Amino acid sequence: MENNNIRNDQHCFCCGENNDRGLKLKFEYPVEGTAETSLVVPGYFTGWENLTHGGLMSMLLDETMAHACISSKLIGVTAELTVRFKKPLPVDTEISVKGRMSENKGRIALTTGEITDTKGTVYATAKARFIST
Image (cartoon, rainbow, N blue to C red):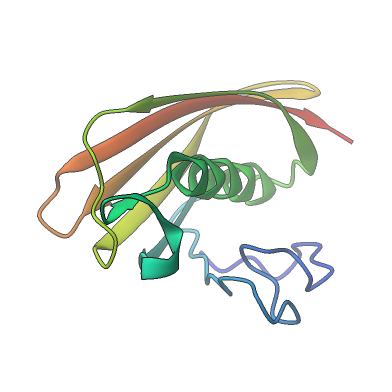
């Protein structure tokens, strides 16, 4: 499913085309209420000894879950984010980030997300609440 109605000011660090320092992620929307993206983790996001900084992992999960909401036409902001780090993620690893809106309660959406590598190894999972603006 391609979603052409996403509001985007093009300066988002994750997906903005006009952010010179951003990741410029491309999102796909396989079905309504889902979003996914992939990337090779740049080495400059090393937190310690060639491991990806947890802040980047959290940001990727948050952004992907937000796009899952957007694919259901819910535009909002993160109210709560919980990340579970399952395994250290080496930089320079190709990863997939997936998000899904699990429940829509009017102005509140509940979401889940995960980061995996090409072999299916799970590095982090997340849950978040978004409130529509």
